[in-house]
Image (spheres, one colour):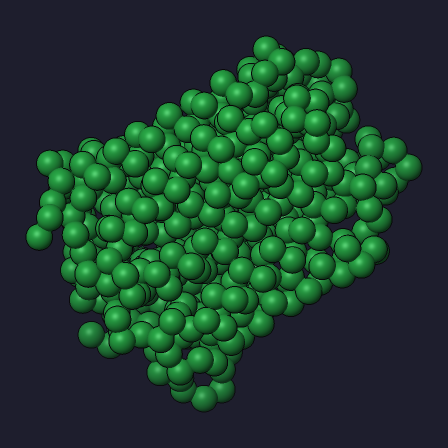
Length: 496
C-alpha cells in the first residue's frame, strides 16, 4: 500500500484540513467590500459578480453529496488528491482572471472543491485518531468553518483599503497549494466505502439542480424584483428539488444519505434545526449591518468593527473542546442561540449601529454562531453510528449552505425594498433574524421534550470503534406517541 512520509501524523493531516477549508470559506465573507473593485477591473457588472458568487455557493452545496457518492465507489484518498489539485487550479484561475468567465469558472471550482475536500478529509480526521485527539479535532473543525467565515470581513476590508483584490486571491491559491502538497505527504491509500452501493444518479442530479436553481434565483435579486420568474420562480423550484431530494432519500431502499435514520431520531433532528436556524439568523446580523456601516466608514474600518466576531468564534471553538466529552455538549447550542439573539438585538438598538454597538454585537454573534452550528453537528453526529458520520455531515452541510448562503441575498434585497429605506428595511430584517434564532432554540427544546431525550455524557470509545452511538437518542416525538415504538438509534441505557 502506498503511503506518504507524513501518513498517520495528526498535525500534518489537521493542517491539510485547515488549508483546504479556510480559503473559500474566508473568501465567501470577504467578497462584499471587494466586489466593486473586481467589477471595475474585470469589466463586470455587480449582477454578474452576484451570479458568480451564487454559483460558487451552489457548487459548495452540491459538492457535499457528490463527495459521498464518489467515496462509495472510488478510492477516497486518491480522489482527495484530485480535489486538492482542482482547488489549486480554480484558485489560480480566479486570481489571474482576465475576464468574467475566467473569474467565475475559477470561483465556482473553489466552492465545489472545498466541499469535496471537506466531506472527504474531515470525517477521517474526526474518527481516525481515537478519543485522545477528539477534543483537538472539535476545536479545529469549529475554527476551520466558522473562524474562517468570521475572519472574512476583516480580511476583505484590509484588502479593499489598498484598492486591490488579486493579492488576496493569490494568497488563497498559495494556501490551496499547501493543502495539495499535504494531501500527497499524508497519503494513505484507502478503498472505496462500498462498491456494491448504487451510484444513485437521481440523488446526485437533485443535489446539483436544486442548489443551482435556488442560488441562481437568489443572485438575481440584485437587479430583479422578488416576484419575477427568474428570482422567486427559480428559488421555489430549487428549494422544491432539495426537499424532493430529502423525501426521495428517506424513501429509497438503498439511500445515498442517512436521511431516514437521521430524521427518525430526536437528537439529530434537534441538532439540524439549530444549525439551520442559526445559519439563517446570523446573516442578518453581519451582512446587512455591514452595508449600512459602509456608508459611513471605509472598508478597513468596517472590517475591524467585525473583528470581535473572530474572537467569539475562537472562544467558542475552545469551549466546544472543553465540553465535547461532557453532557454539557447538549446545552452549548442552546447557549449559542441565546448569544446570537443578543447579538442581533445589540445591532438593532441603533441603525446604523455605533462603533461600540458594532463591536459588542459582532462579538456576541461570533460567540453565537460558533456555539451553535458546529456543536449541533457533533451532537447530531454522536447520536448515530460512526459509519454514518460522513453521510450525516454531508446532508447537514448541504442544508446549512442553503440556509446561510442563500438567505444573504434575500435579506439584502428585503432590506433595500421594504420599509421605505435601507435603514428601515434592515431593522425589519434584523427582527426576522432575531425571531429565527429564538424559534430555532424553542423548537430544539420542544423536540427534546417531546422525544423524551436527555443530556448524556458521550461514550466516545465505543462510538469511535464503530460499536455503537455515543449516546441513546429516542425516536422522534416518542414521548407523545400512543403506541410503543422501537428505538431509532442505539439502545436505551435504562434497559441495559
